[in-house]
Length: 325
Image (cartoon, rainbow, N blue to C red; front, side, top):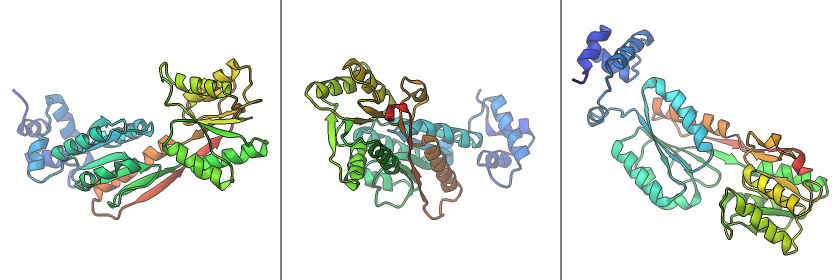
């Protein structure tokens, strides 16, 4: 037989009302009493009836999270660490940036009556805005644009890091700068804006025309094809430090040197980057900082749902290493 709220009350020596308040993190319940109630519930394998609570107009004590960005893993970890002690449930969906998946997830979050949603925002998500508006508490993180719908938002700006890298490369006498990656991405748009500021042309090598297996092999093949066609960049920016590794290998296989002939700049500042040969210069987006700010916004929104909307910006930095020259 499943344990009931009365069993938890009897085990912890409090009233059923106190048990209910303990699960709501009610300020009227002391930390010691709440811990005693939660310990009793764990011992009895008791789970509160979230559906009944929602039907009574209460909190579902749940948060929906939509992931489509590497920063998402840090955000999930931060949210879990912060909300788990308060008995919150997180529903996590890997959207892969697919509008159909996101549409279904937002509807499912609405059906579950989550207390808040956390998601990355991209300009092509505008058709989903009516669905997002139906959620009271929305926390977004984004690199460009935002919906008209008022919500908490954390902006991640890579342009200062790109600008710093380009300034350094120009100082080193390098002006033939290429970006290696897919067209119509935020990385491409950021790079274009920065190069326009320096009155430099935007040179692009497309990767989507090549197969991407094994991982990032399309970056290798795309650059090899460009080099064979006579293109000679003296700098290659690319998306991801794994891709930068492929670029370095391609340059070497072509009989050229990094950074002597071609400087290479990655993206993401992965843990392995400084241990490569040569160590890979990168753009650090501070995913943990973004996660911390998003989590703070979420906690504030859950605790103070009527407070004014907040926004903040995290600026990426250029991490200079040997591959940049």
